[in-house]
Length: 271
Image 1 (cartoon, helix red, strand yellow):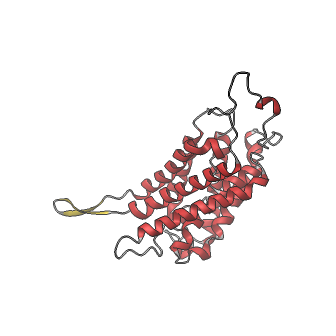
Image 2 (cartoon, one colour):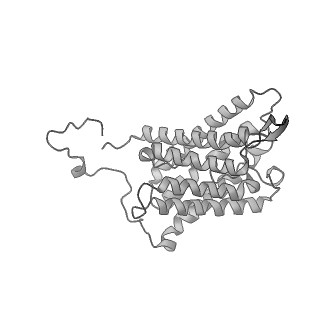
Image 3 (tube, one colour):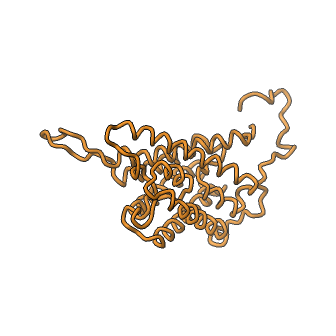
């Protein structure tokens, strides 16, 4: 087995963040509300996927990409997850900046793609309509700054608890992406009316500048709250669960004895 290089890992994180923003926010922009004409007796009908569909879409982006590239990068796709994992000693701090940079770039590329597609319908204005996060007048339900901060920090903390627990070596193997994806779905079911749900600074950044309408000015909260919640979870997971991996080697370096290839085996053969 070969260890993925850092460029490969960053590429996987960029791809995963792109898919999360494009799939999740795209479902909100294009499919949450859709009026189909002449459905029943010539009458129009709302056939969009609604909040439930959008929540499920976000969860599915994580499930699909975690299975696709999780073995390459660990499937963070989220700066808060990366920082929370580092606080929990599951990830090297020296690799945090690269991961966050790749995630933000992936999110911005998805935001640009959504902006470009949304402009393809005559009369549709992307401004204010690209599923940006917000508080106060930019919150779907009019929730205050404090309410949004508390909700985002709390939900991100729970999200990290699920991630840290589901990816532990003693958890059922192969099911972590499902648990994590369902957790993100539930988080969206709770908080779409509160803040349009971030729990991911890359997701918020990805659409904020294309959305405009106050989203860039409120973006600071959707970095602060998720990172705060993730850091709290990372620092307390071992206290709550008794699963303490802070003394483990997380350098990712291969021990010399593990790199030995048996005689007669091509070391460069695909594995």
